[in-house]
Length: 85
Image (tube, rainbow, N blue to C red; front, top):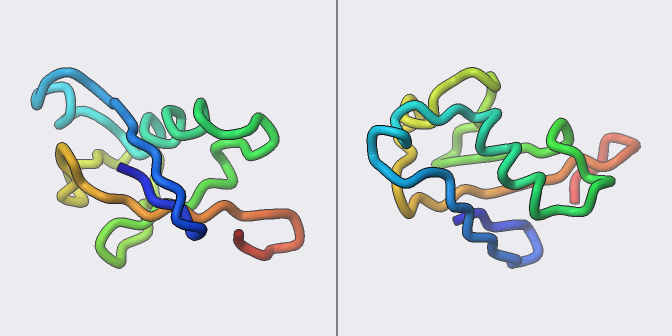
């Protein structure tokens, strides 16, 4: 589940098995989220946070952050001018 700053919630279905989940990357998660957002947002403007850690490095595995099925991730969208929404 992904939470936005304004209280919006998105349920993201990443994969079907635990084995697939172990191979999912930050980039793949951003791509799935971007599919549900307006085209103007773009995945490069997404900032994802899980337990006080920014999900950096698009090739980093979600499992390296301890993310698993039903984890809650916070989302911030960077807008032009450097402000966040």
